[in-house]
Length: 433
Image (cartoon, rainbow, N blue to C red; front, top):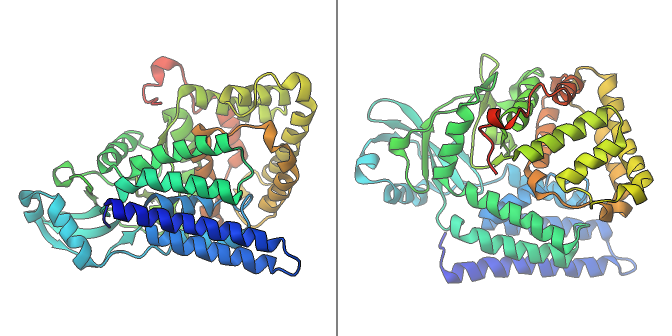
């Protein structure tokens, strides 16, 4: 993929073309006799084709959008969900010269054998199994050419698309703030040196029940990340109790360590014969400030106590509501908080060990969200939490596939009791902003 000016113009043209077609279909949907459902289906297919072909940040945004079943029409999210699983790898004869160019001659000579069929492919790059001259079996992750250069342009063009199409019920300023956060995270995902540092950092956490590969610095380069091979079966083959490993792991990552593996793609998890969960792909790690973690803990604690004024105060500290609104609109906020809490707590209290299944919880939350959209302007976007929410959403749907079981309410109570942290500033040495 070329990073030339011509290529950038081509990407811009394709993205904006999809936006224009989306707006056009929106007009047709208002015409009497128009096929409303088919119009959304065509829009979803168009976005899938456009974003999938462009890969990079465009494809990543499509993958994230696919998780927002509550906001976007289902005909769009169903199509974009295919981006989570349908990434086609480059042919080996096309990707192998990229690897040979990026490694120095001594590094490349150490590769005794490399499998031509990719183990995995995604929006940023693809992974191949290899054997070194030492006999060690490793995996080599190779970034597609031009991806890093296209991030800023893709985000800017997709920002225009979202504003024109008005698919999201959000203010233009909120969309800009969200896109700034996405631009930073996606830019980091193209930096394999940073991914190697993320992996090294996550390995220091020693998360119970989780296994991570080890980076091999002597076989890394710009756009090339080599790691030890960690074999595992597809996570869909896991027993239901594997859910507790991941759910508690998220609690520890967020509150104890302030660093969250924030790419809940199904292909980024596997299950080993001994029941341990293998974790892959460390390009998207969200580092959370101490203030953010404290506010999130306080929201959980106040929500469990049904103390809506304290929930609101914590949300204000997080930036999720305008300042000084409780005095005038407290009754509105309290009703909204109560409605959502009732739905969640009823489900969790009914099942001390909660089973992630089609139990109607999501349908009730979606209905409440739709009913509450009238009040969307009472809240602010919180870019700092976008990838936390993305992780929770992706994790929920992942655990649905195995009907996972975990003591979710107990874990929330442990968060409220500060069992996972955050601790005082001297103990929070892993915080990064």
